[in-house]
Image 1 (tube, rainbow, N blue to C red):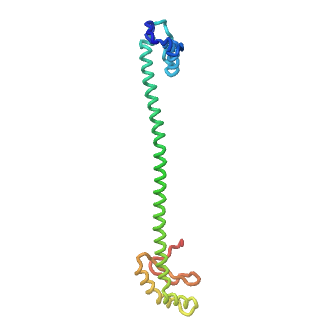
Image 2 (image 1 turned 30 degrees about the vertical axis):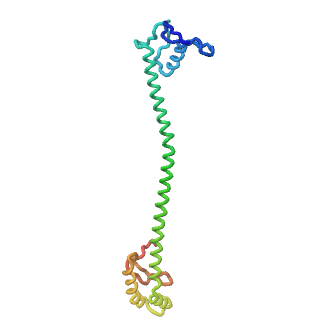
Image 3 (image 1 turned 60 degrees about the vertical axis):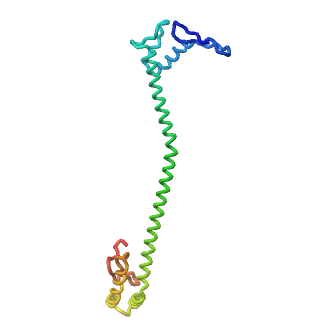
Length: 193
């Protein structure tokens, strides 16, 4: 049953439908204000009888209203941040997985391109090395039957022709059996190799 109490202006609960006794609501107000005083140190919790609660010209109800609005706004902000973090974590995880998949695909594509280039370079070098006439002359030179000048005069035009036919080759070098350079066409082999 709800009974108005004119002295404090609050409604008191005397008994509920089950017959349980409740304290009047105005008796809980000092405890609530004491809790708020922890968060609002300037709040005065002294109650002068049944007069309206005062604090430096402002009523406690205005201070209470301001505190409730402040803590309500902070609670909403905290809940919003928590919800944003919780909802963004799966999105971040999915984007990370997608980026890893994209990087792996790019790596595989570049690896295949490099493999194809190396295969073409190997094929071209095998074609150049398999020219039988110059290979036989190099074997004769390695046996000491012809001089270096004869080998260069014979091999340089053949290797120049091979260099001009391939767009991927910029230089051809022939070595003897002791790995000494005997014929070179185009760009030389860099010294670090």
